[in-house]
Length: 362
Image 1 (cartoon, rainbow, N blue to C red):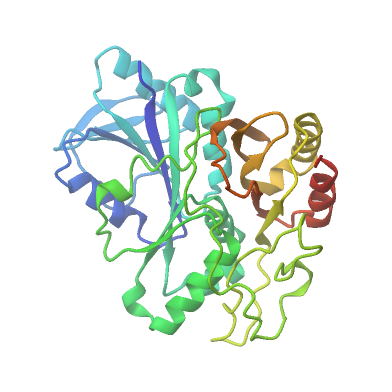
Image 2 (image 1 turned 60 degrees about the vertical axis):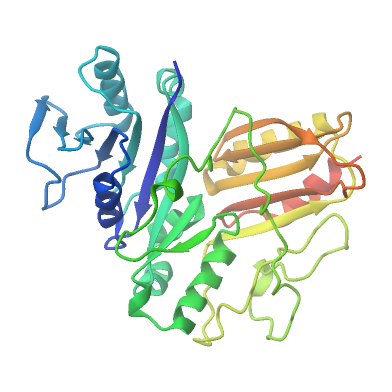
């Protein structure tokens, strides 16, 4: 039986999660979606109660979708929905989990990999994060939850852009890009978003064949302009260390210009590049040690690697202490065999990672 795809919808308070969710549920897409909410808001999506349990409440909506409130634990809720689906009591094709505005997406994502029954039933498709253009800069300054939600995102939807100037929107987008370069950004108006841009994004695939994103770690056209002053501190990766093993981030760093204010986010990202192949055993040992120590601070990491002993690209990605890898396509004739890795997290030990990765090269 095919795995049931699951999408995590997160974002800070007031960012528009419910608005987007209602648009998706009301669209004539013909899909039956089970929606899991941390708690029901003031406006119940529908009042037609299908099943009432002692610890769960499941609501059947007019279009065949299901809404379920978490009373205890996400794992138990997913198991309950899966059991009712197997017994023919519920019919749904995918799951959407809407977190509270103060939620950390990390433990939610880990649920899909730490429990065998869940992993054998569901496939985590992607983490979608809503960002409120009007209030995001202050929220990112003040609240770690907002920064973590951006760091974990596979896709960023920016709402309320009509309430800010084009310059202010550009400043926010540069900041988001600096925090999480791997997540595409889309501006969304009142939740209007084609369902194809919400589901089946395959942004989060561990222990499965991974598709290579052709835009992954694409060089930013603004990189190395250096027209601005370097106010970014030690964590700014504008410059390559030795030209080969430690690449530049390729990020636009002019996100502070409009406010002349330095945003020292604790959620940061950096990119590592290498032109020599990795030794598989050394790399496995090093990454294993790193995630054991720093795993809780490592939100997402992903790479396309040139590995000794194979003509195939090796694709890997992970969240916290969980890693997955698989063989990709063969390196094309004449294609530069450059390994690229991106790390996103809180106060990651960049120097340790760079030195350790360098020692894993042949």
